[in-house]
Length: 246
Length: 192
Image 1: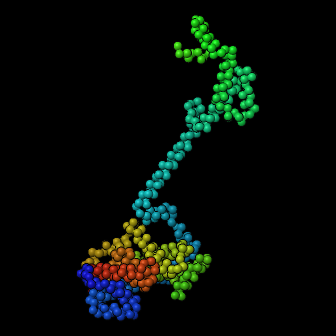
Image 2: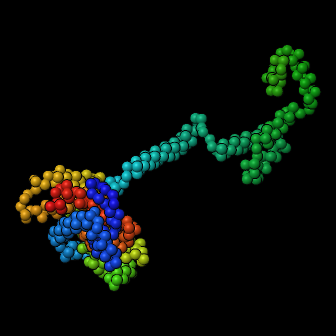
Image 3: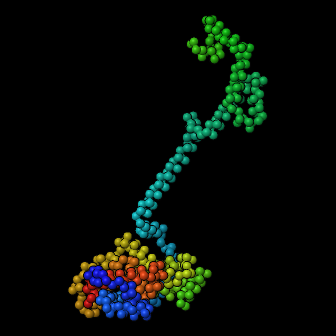
């Protein structure tokens, strides 16, 4: 037996409660009754608990005496048809429901919800601003410096190559324009015509202009031209401007 | 036993779409659920609302009802949860519930000489004191007391409804009775 709050406590507390509410078996009940005769703690607690029980019963009878089961039953029965239950449930507006949710939820959940909402707003703003900015850069300022994607860059290069080829068709002899013709016949292969091919074509044109000279002859000619003053240097091929002796 | 099986049949009928079946369950259990809610919340309006909410929640979760438990245990469990949620909400809104009232009136009830000596009023004061003392109990103790005293459920039934071991139910009830006795003594009640 121990003491708590200046009152002795017996270790048979559970038996006491079962005995008090008549839920102990006949044997257990008799056993506890015998024990209580010798145990002051159990005897006094039994008496006090009986008083508490009576007080609660008094309160219960007073409180539930005013309760009309008929009116309650009518109220509840009227709301228990599925349709009415659902209607009752939907009376809450979205705002009210949200407010109620926030009132019941703990502080961390409220904070997390606010943070998530803010993050969502920021993300939405970023996405909107980026999607709004991109098309104006490409479409509205064709004369200004443009920002190209890799696909746009390839398209622009191909377009420039084609234009170059078209122009070169008018200035180059028909024999050299085979590649351009092929391009015309097979437009799908235009895409595969690279800048290297263009370079090859242009070098062919240049070599056509310089036809008849070997490298040694060209070097000799350059040397000669430098020795002859008054010769117009503009007529010289561009390759000679880059001589290291200048 | 027969009632319990009939309750289960009613649930089955309600699940098949019989609109009267669930109404019958409500009629059978509403008084007990109201008593439980009243004991837990201490106010008739709150108890009515909690009772309605209990049956609404039960109706919504009818499919979640496990056949291995009794309908009564299931309803009691829902009711206890409804009451606890309701008290939490009331606390957030700073409404005066049983617990707050207990705190507020503690000083008044600590002075038994100030309570009216008239015998007619005595009983009323006593029940008010009990109500406040019950309201001041922690929820886990209060629900056991209310289920036992208001609904007169057996320890086994309480154990099933709250999904607690039998010994825990008994020890909680014992602790609750001790706390009530001390509070009522403070209010000058059962030690008369």
